[in-house]
Length: 123
Image 1: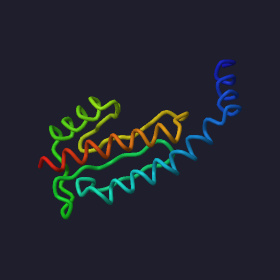
Image 2: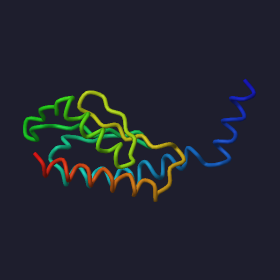
Image 3: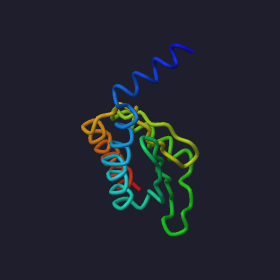
């Protein structure tokens, strides 16, 4: 029990929760919104703090989910470019650590942008 309390105390002292809120609901959310506006493959995006998801679609009008095999291709391309994400069905979950910096978010968003640009250009 003491280790739990110590962890919570350290998180409070270091502003971990405040950082997750500020970065996640600030530059991360804004950047993901810009990507969603730029790429029709993103049928929806949602999130709070540092937990966000991009819902990928093959048809932006009918919101037809992108097939899992295509999502896995995107995941592999993201990983090859240095961005580790996890996927579930047709969603890419963007979940950086609570201590992420604005510069790291910018780098991750640039990787997402580059991979989505290449993927959509090849379709």
